[in-house]
Length: 419
Length: 106
Image (tube, rainbow over all chains, first blue to last red):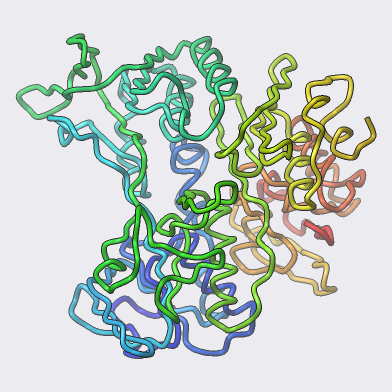
């Protein structure tokens, strides 16, 4: 680690972005016994930290900043990983080999190899009033601190967007006694990431906990008082809902501008192959900013915003940077905590052509198939099913879709062919 | 600061200082103690911070319950009587000297 401002003027690997993916590349390089200089530059004034708790335990006050830090300063020193905090790379010039990055204070860093780990930013709500006081997005530690403070003396919270972050915040806030409304523009919750049974299940559970969820509901304006403080949310049908705090969770936009200006091929994200190689030799991209080949839909690409994706991609990309053969990628997985619901997802379900639902009291498992092969599972409050599917996907084992709903056998038994 | 003694799968032993309020997993990861993966960062979602609690400490830590207990059923290394997920071991002064053996497969 070095003092802020003390960037080396030359480094072997420059990593732009100090989140889970950026730090992941750095630590994996050291695990591969890479001996060159490694520099990580992040624009937030923090050492690399975990984002998932920001909408969960951190928001509820169960975890503090120290809990969030990914690695201790001593670890970074010991592994000779230089992390520049609170500094932004404003441009990157690529040469035939290597290149030069210019920082926001006009200093330059020359590099041999480059990793983009620039992450994604929260999408703003494109309506009037989106910048009123009391309206927040949730992406960074600073956002989360503001939201945490704002929610202390608040009675009425409106969450715009029925995705993971929105539902996590809604559930945690409801549990603390707030009056909570969730506004979702599409006909169901988590529409982009799961099949209807999970959407319906979550709808029921959150409604039972007292959250007012409105589907097919678009926001047209956020209305404020003379002090510029939000007071109401106006809907497309003209109705208004009172709000002391509005949290906007309507998706993330990959940060591609820097890479695009540097001449890399970009779509929604920075276009990469299975191992994180970009369109330019010696340059990789990892994490939320990278758009990778779709595992189930040939010819299509997708961005995946998850810790697991950041770690898997950074591991492979570090192999590419050091010229070592890349290992096989681990199974994609994801989790979300929503009050007493623990959601665990193994695999990527997008591209499924059939699904089978297994429901028992408060547990739910949705198994996804493509061409009769198991490709993913969404699991609520059933860690055994989650771990069984995750392991099976890694080993290429499947389950007979015709028998998958037989509750007299566990998912694990069905996967082991014991049924 | 309470100390934790980790026995890693590679045969090394690591005596580290933990912050009160930090989990044993978090302490190990931050300092780079080998053997713990902890991909989910302590959310009780991945079962990759599996440890065996030293017999003399099991009373102080307690045994796994509920969700943690179910997660351990399918951990990569078969569970034992004193298996815990170390993200659920929140450090207190009373746990000073806690001794944990990290499960070989995570």
